[in-house]
Length: 379
Image (cartoon, rainbow, N blue to C red; front, top):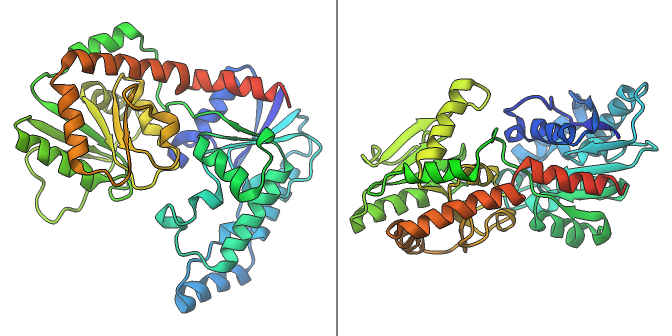
């Protein structure tokens, strides 16, 4: 099967969208599909939308998204049609709805995404405070895209439900296939057992990985580490991806490593070390469309402590590969859970083992590829 893989951005860029554009393309290739990348689309708009943006943001005090203007999606469609003029394919697949919303092609169209525009509104800070015009256009353009799709595949039940409930999409055309971990993994159950056995049994290491300290619950992770130390369990909080601005100097138990790039061998080696040596991944997010780092942690047999928001419940099953706490859970809930698992090493070993099993069966790109292939063969 020949697939036109359509992205507005460079799909080989590991820094764009957490590298998902790249890993999705690799997943499809690994399943034997022949891919024709259609990317690098330009957001071509006239001055009028830019003037509207200035008016709404500086006069009205509302956010205005040029990206959600129908003219942008129409421009993308024209560019895609031009780039596909001499390309013969059996199917068009895009990890976003904007490039295919107004595409006029005979091939069936499929999208594979982690969220809908409706689901993200008033959920992420960047999707909060939109003006009425942006909301109307955003909903209308995405509805048009979903009507064009043979299948709309989502990484979580949360996103899939949004497509059905907010856009009236037919449940028969909505599928759920979780994204895999964006790490290279040839680890085995024996490797995971070895990693677990080598971890400290006296110092508990919590790993926080994220660029957005606030949205991903950094303050909660910090408080959990503080409280665990107060109970007498020596605990360290490793912060990777950002340098939080705290009101006072970092406590001794906080180790800040800043941004680490996956695109370099040195960066990958550092990240592998963090995931291998930590005892728990801490991601108490207040908003999360999916949570790729949870899958990545599980590929190292690392259990995750997180929240049951957005797409996270698709990834984390309580006491299988970690625990997803209700958003308004107290810090005490996290502390008690860590203590109950860390002080019972047999239970920790079992949780580590089942975390890796969850990765292999559901949260790897190999597992995703098997499901995707089954769906695309029915197109």
